[in-house]
Length: 199
Image (cartoon, rainbow, N blue to C red; front, side, top):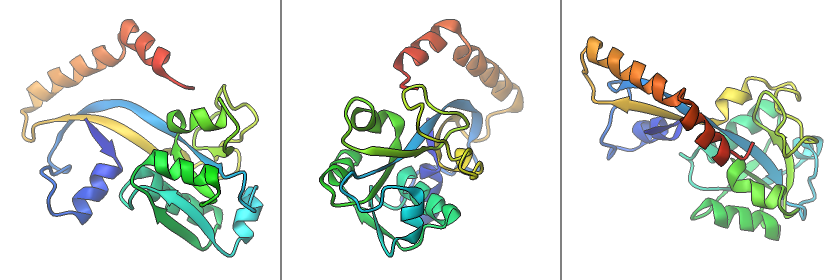
């Protein structure tokens, strides 16, 4: 299972990866993970317009090759937010805690990671969702599509793709793809995925 864009960025910038995504025999996509931008309630910037006018926006990230860091850079540029200052953390929990404390203004992480802080409590303020439609738990939070940036829906998403050995014969790849499609469309599988979903 590959996570894109992270694995792709690693391949471009690191010499130590033991895969070549251009040679993988791709079978299908398991899921796309929805991301949310949230603001620290202690930040002086509380709206998208505030962020656009800000002289400097501190962002809590986990390395430049992570989906959250890449998504932040891409989203900020598309939305006209200048002077993003990426502050790296050891992990997303540390970055989120940094936003709760007010050390950073903005975090962008998967909805499941932010849910305890934007739905279960009000530790962070959700600003927008990278999805086509609003999330059931966040009916008052607009999507990036609603805000006029529909291209960010697919760009700021982690895709979990399944691939296998390079050079698999076409007839075998066809069988594997059909089996994969049956598995991900199985009612029992779908039920389990929905039970684990936060949307």
